[in-house]
Image 1 (tube, rainbow, N blue to C red):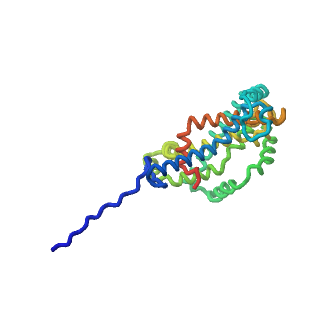
Image 2: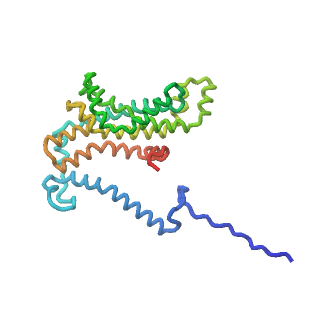
Image 3: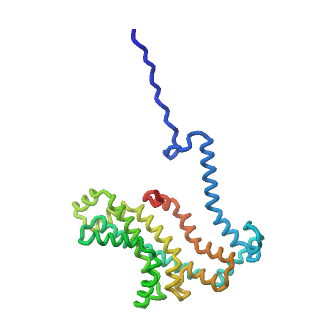
Length: 299
């Protein structure tokens, strides 16, 4: 008489989220509700300072000075924005900021990609020593370089010029190091195949390496542009002509000349950050994809 065997039932796998990632809180409506609530709370905490700044900028100075923690202290008005626009040449400063940030981004990305590719694939003499100097430069605080850089600008008669604002910002050792690590991870077989077909080193770099490096190049360009746009200290030091000032520097001079006005300070801060907010809204998918692909979000 043969023994009967009980069929083994396959174990049910835990359900997955629509994107394919496992549901960390488990299946069901309650974990989804908890996750949604947590996201709403975090989003509200992140947006609270921005909402506070917007509401304060839309209040009169008299209402802002009233005691109390609530930012809603009176009727909304655009008086702070009108005064900022009347007292300063905001349009010229915005154009200068776009020009400076755009050129800094273009030159920095070009120099950083070339240097990183040389470190990643080059075999020239002194490569290790030069790479060590580049890595060591990452640890140097930018504030320590202000005096020698300003002396150089004086030596070459570049103070109060676009070159003085742009050139010291195009050297970014951290971007060179990040790009180098990315280039080292690219398969060499693709470059070797292009060389076998007769492609030069420049052709290999432009037609093979750069197309494969679009996510990291886009991430580097985004972060360099934001850094150049928000840079206040160096343009403030090297420019005296109001026609050459960038938007953060120009708005700061307006506030200094007419005293500290909290509503106007918030209005000036929002005007300076408005182009970055618009840029993020237009390119948010590419920005998130670049950060996620390259690991800029940290680990």
